[in-house]
View (tube, rainbow, N blue to C red):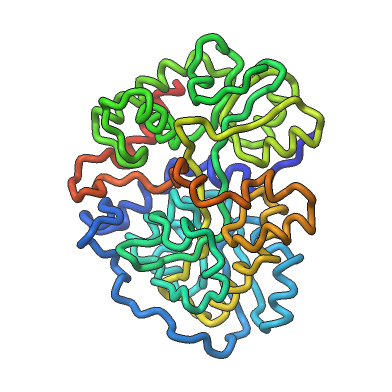
Length: 400
């Protein structure tokens, strides 16, 4: 089976390693490593967001990934508002951080950022608070996406949620007659050489989430806030896993190919891989294991020096509507945050709502831990958590 390169290949996995080092070095010492801690405010916390949307400025400069401004939904937006979109497509988060330095340098209006980089942008002062009242469909968002920790700090919204995706356990149904229910499947010596996981330091969080249930004495409450003992335990587990791994994947096409050829029978994936493999006739299924799962979430964020804020708000409101949410979800294999997008997805592609977990109830998200930039300051105000640059170094050592 020929697998086309997915639009987000390399964006979340391939070049993230440098971003937090770059971003945090630009932050003030305490807030920069602090994270969303009560009493610690980002530099732009006092900036008042727009109270109303004014006349469109005719231009909109977006820093984003290729496809997020696909003409199928971007062209109707421009026709309706007069806001001409000029995108700059970036392939890695370090490019986002560099381009967003100094509030976008009065060049960029908005940036689309995933949760693992959003806090770095927030604490560097490069994005401004946003007024959710100017986004009509905000009330239709799944509750968990109205004020997620990755784009909302101390009740101030620095981004509007867009799409998300869970990290699922993908498995070969012929090899697993009894479907696995635990992440233990990717740490089990019985499947040595038949396992694949992403080449991403965020695997440390996945290991920590698993340990939070299997080794409760570690007292892991948040897989993105690990003290030294907890961090060391996660790294030890990943080192034990290393000889079991067939290959770490950086491109979704890599994982799809390995499952299609039978090189691997179990691994960490996203709904996109499952859908593509099933469409090709591969005997696969996925699940959210009993320990829960991590997930990424994207947001549109307003540059601190945005030259066209009215068009920026018009765009954010537009891409939050059910129809556009559904179009983008199916284009990328993502999941919309607008609950009303499910019906639109079904109209476009029958069965897609269930495939991408778009119609889940609130309880489903109880087991989901959304990516956040690991920072030295913990949620309890202490500075005992392991920052992301150490995650990068440790992950590199694990793979060696």
